[in-house]
Image 1 (spheres, one colour):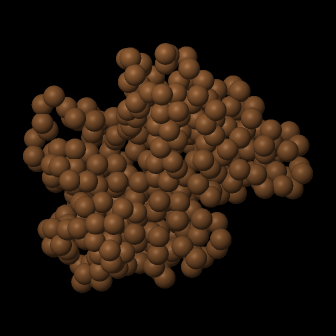
Image 2 (image 1 turned 180 degrees about the vertical axis):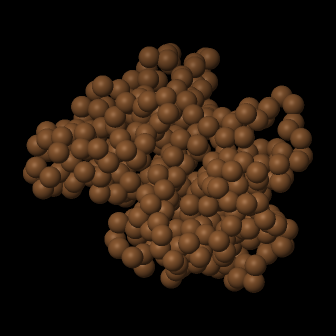
Image 3 (image 1 turned 90 degrees about the horizontal axis):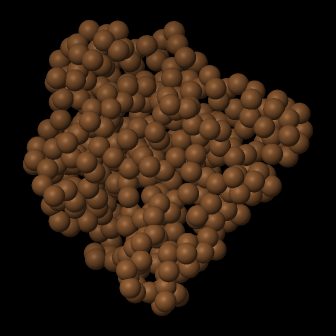
Length: 219
Length: 161
């Protein structure tokens, strides 16, 4: 831990980031076994594993400041306590075009977020963000490869338009113009954090099921 | 009397849990060893954050220190100080011998799709460079899958990171 405790707003932002990565990892993992072909089963499973690994490291950072542990933060909170953006909660399994649209939009937003955190005054966070950035390079390459493959596809283009307000909501308002410029889209009203989608209750129920089944067990 | 040399030697005997041909020291995940009397502090920097072998590595290292009669403290350092450039030449040789293509050198900007899609990675089986990217992702976070057009064999490529 740092000699000086990081400001609580920074800790809250890290917790929100962790929730994003955990829930997105969960949604990505829903493709395991049902992706369009075997390589993508492997790819989406690996991406999911990466996002959840990032979530764990971020939760550990928060736990180092607030006390408790990463698992408790990930699985013992009530649904309303999660701060993830509605974007990551959307259940898109079965819709490959929308999944690729979210993948591309999320990775673009996430790159802006991670690069900013690499400059953080909180040294552990800056170090962790730098490590995450290296790993995310592969997620970004995968997303851009698919966006290129599906470029011009009507379903993809429609999904990109539909999901754009959600993508903006990943970032702090001050970072949104950068995303809009990067993707060549106009800034619109964002779908903000603070509310949950209808499907989140079921996701939370499923995600915490094993942990709740034997309280206090060491896994 | 425990010395840093003895600790390094003990850690060099520990296989990577997922790629057992290479040791944790050859993998470059041991960043530092400090000995103070009976206390041994090991700085460990995992490969990938999502790597499920992290706990196994940490526990193996603690056990190895205990077997030397010392008290371990394994400090997990989560920053970007680990890169595949930390894999030793010996580690690279062992990877390749077991059919596992070692990572390419890391450039300042990191890997790009253009580089990875180039036919420039050497097949660990036949030595041909006529290999193509099959999948950026593989069975563990650290691996990609490539295919050798020459000997028609898929192989695993350690990701450059």
